Length: 423
Image (cartoon, rainbow, N blue to C red):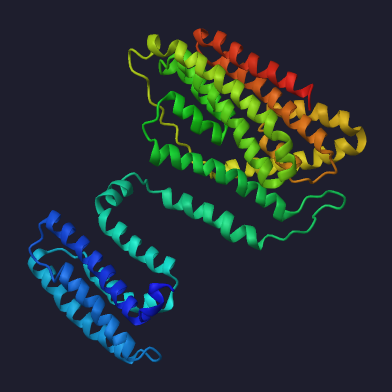
């Protein structure tokens, strides 16, 4: 027989309330001693007694909560007096301790009415938020004026506009709906925005190689264009820059694979082995070039990149929207009039632009395309896009970087053609 079955539930809840309140009080003592505050209304014992008071008043009247509500009002009055005294003596207006005390008072109803995971989540959140004051201040200093506008844009396009968008065809014969169109915008924006946040807040001092990793999640083409040009203007090391460009291309394969699984899991499984193989080949070439040049080019210090362009710019969204609709129509009519051979030709042509709109059209299954044909078109689009990036890098970059780019992109393109023979 379970020992806990013989222990009254009220007794267990009392112990939990006291223990949790005491933990919060101990955290307050440590925090206040560290800040060396002169005016306190209490720490460990006081918070434990606040939790016990809330427990007693709650069990008196669980149905109407009259005692618990009255006790909360009286306690709030005392907290108000203490807060006024703190302002007068310390000149500090922060009321974190008061709010934590009120949460401690509410522990008993939480333990009685909510599942254990939620009670623990509240406790952990209170302890963590009380401890990370300095970290939050340092984090907030990284925010620029428009960061919250950027966040609001993403929440709007993902959480407000998408659910309200109709899922009905707008052009007869063309399987293009506003909902699927906007879903593509949200998916690509989410990956780009995640890369942007990582670069700006997690790895703000990222070197060239890590910049390539994060840039590949956003756009390997844009990363190539940006890094290659800076080898002439900012004295970026050619070999290390070439390695960063190639690792951005390696991350492109993972990004495309993620989009494939998001929109068509079956197609994603077909692309899994080919794209993981292409990722491995590209990453291996990048690492080879990186380690070959790291010692001789990093002696003067590896430059830092500060390209943190907002991925949710209105012009970027409009361009994606235009290309998405264009490629949806092109794919439909190419298949209708020219069949699979036309789609193969189109997949090579789209590589000179942003390939994401074309690929998302394939992944969403807007056209009646056989899976093997969609796989071939996807790989072919990456081939032409990689050739374009090689041309960008060679044209815009320093002469010393060209042989590394031809070696890297040449190897990736050859590997892509080999894989095409087996799909």
